[in-house]
Length: 207
Image 1 (tube, helix red, strand yellow):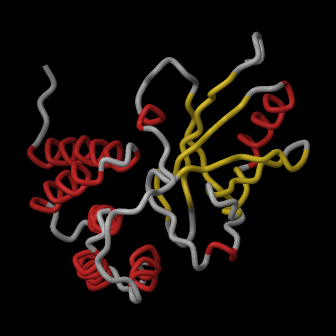
Image 2 (cartoon, rainbow, N blue to C red):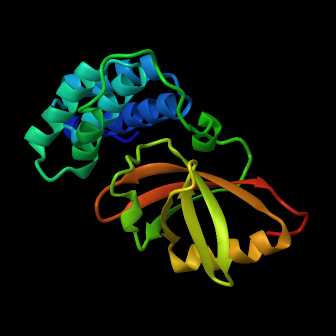
Image 3 (cartoon, rainbow, N blue to C red):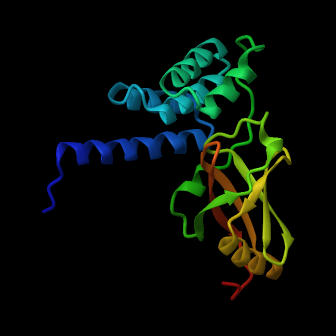
């Protein structure tokens, strides 16, 4: 029987709570996402990722004043944090309002349902996202732009960047055969964005 130290147990618990919070957000269950991230912050009050996720949940619930306060806490703990800064800028002119509909991918993309799933990075992060807030769970669409090039876009059609070369080559070949893919943001920073890719349709033997 494997025995974990208190620190290891804490890390494992935090990772499990993080997965739970991401799944709630991905499914658009913002009240549950709020509660899940608040639970994380009880033990890790300066966790900037949890703070940003909480801020996003509050934004989606139309509680903009609370969201602004949370993003300010993120910036206080991590001044260069671009996610918090972009969100705060977006919220400056908004007053509390009813929750809005957002482009979120179904939580099944994060859990095993028998479909092929890949995690990869987006390279060449493009500047036209400077005013766009990317958050965990946001839908990502993929367009084949060359024999070995796949462009990632938001649900609104804004270019995020290109998939890293090895994954782009693989998906280009499979998309040319007729396979179809969808994706969701896993994490994002000024330097790197990770996406989860799921195969939603597969031509027989196109593996």
